[in-house]
Length: 292
Ligand code: SF4
Image 1 (cartoon, rainbow, N blue to C red):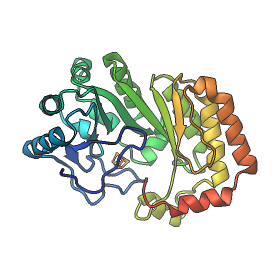
Image 2 (image 1 turned 90 degrees about the horizontal axis):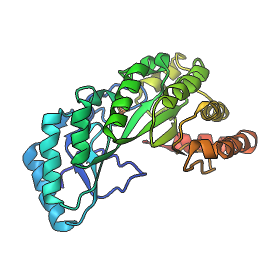
Image 3 (image 1 turned 45 degrees about the horizontal axis):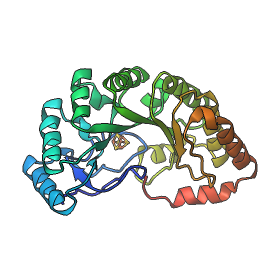
Image 4 (image 1 turned 180 degrees about the vertical axis):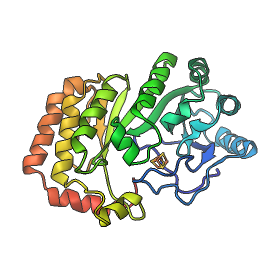
């Protein structure tokens, strides 16, 4: 198999097999991310994709799921994706679920009809790392799209019947804009129908512009307690009837099958962590992280 490091597997999806159809990230300028900083974006040559699929056909001929790599494989135009999807189905005829993480902007160049066809070819679940629904924050962290873009593209996925996740990056607006980040993200997410809302806590990784800004005093990061308070405010305002999970450094498992059904429990767990959690330990875990 042909992979370009780093290989990021969504920890919540069946992770095997993986198939790289692009390398790197077309955007590569979110202020909190260095993951693909040294990788030039490119399309994996078709003959390499086919060679990998032949290898999978020999080793896992009954595969029913596959995860496409890398950061935003669906940036490829419809005309390039169709032959790749057809090839996946040809070599792995029992394929049912094609998963991919991708950027909101990658959906702009596809019509609902085209997305529907990709679904028929197996595209069932997309993870959108939107990080915020607050326009000030989206601009501040260089996400490269607006809250209106999020709404437009998510509604296209809904029309096409493709399930999707949206993520909230806890802490990424800093102290200056924490409240707006939490409330406006929930407001935008509430206008969408994701199957899951996922949250992660901001870690200032070495080499990121946001860490440099923090060192210069231009970005004021939240403390662990403030992160939990922001997350609580976000959940309090969230009305999506979907699953929820977080890979915050909080010890409590904050996952549930339905935000609305589990909301009280999630908020109670956050209150408990705010009042009695080992915040120093959480900070130490966050400091020790080296990648997402
Ligand atoms: S967060 Fe995602 S879109 Fe932003 S630079 Fe990193 S990989 Fe690319």
